[in-house]
Image: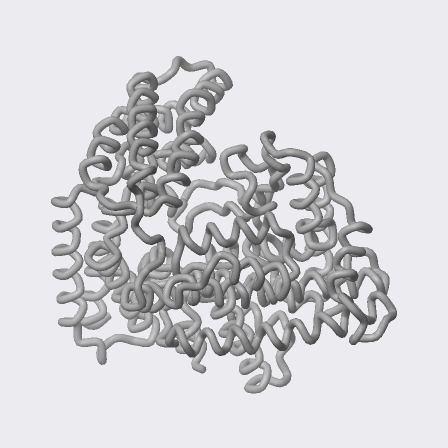
Length: 549
């Protein structure tokens, strides 16, 4: 090992340790449990100190003679640089700790310690007690730090903090009862602090007039750092709109074949989707068994067709916690990339929230019908997130950089590509021509949603797209249920830069797979995909470098 390599690897490990210490909840989520007893310090002094620390680390990275590094370490250097630059941008430019009350919610800090058996209960309980005791000061700092806030962020924060209160009053007590331990100290003080903060936020609602939209300059930075890609917002918008046009044309063709009608027939796509939903009914009682069956079906198909190697991974389909329901019907909850304990991957599946009325439930399950659940299971589980993250956990790398700085663009891109991969290889839920057409129609609807998500993100934050325009786009061009569209509109206002990761990642992953097939025409699907998944979860541009493309 030469001096530059040793210098970089030492700096990488030191920089990661510092980042994890500065973000103890993020560290818990990633699977590093050294800081499980802490909440983050978002005070102005702590943020300024962290910004200076990152600046020093970036200066040290620039001082490394990178021409002396091999390809693997050079890629890791660029990943670390990008990750630190992103954090610096979020502290210095985005400054969300000063206007986004959702940042100041200790609920995730507690939920992560409750939801996984990564350590014995007494050890986790001690960390829970420590984090509980920190909540009053944490929320007091929040009130001193937050200034002008967007109304929708305050409204959402109140709802989320109500969920956090239930974690403190109910979820902790349930775990203590199961494990036959006393309640930790600090519960009453934490509940009082949360109630005080909720009351304060409710007082702020009438004067919370900040726009939730980011300006063009800040949004351009968010997009750059979120995608780790130089594509401009305007270029990305043109690509997404062209993809939407292409996909909706294909949807008309598939819908016409499904209904045995002309592609020019009136409302052919919507009527086909309505028929699919009517013939693929889901209820709160059947949603979990349907996903379990879909997971078995997809796993057998991947194995039989030898599309990609399937690592050994303990996977459980579970009922989604109530506090997470009402947004998506399922998500993958995998062990963090730094987790050393042997813990399962969960596919969390959501019955509807108990508070929903009959029409809300019916609308939700028209959107997430049994055929779509098959497509979603491919995305979330097999061979999507569950399989890809299991491969990433096995990747051998010289530092923790790729685990710490994993690319959401690659992770989501692979999962979208996986949907297309299975259907292109003949997957269908019921081994019939009609079933194959039904799931293809749903997969194309998800492709349309992916393109629309990108359009929404860009137009909302840099082009003043109105709510009516957004809902029209989603319900008419995307054929979405109104409830789904309203939820996505809120998400577009509450977040920035995340919605386009699916589209950008899918385009990049599909391009890499196609290029590998051209360069290696004699390779099987499994050889192509195993190579793509053997380097962890790097940004697609770095994956190209690692595989020599």
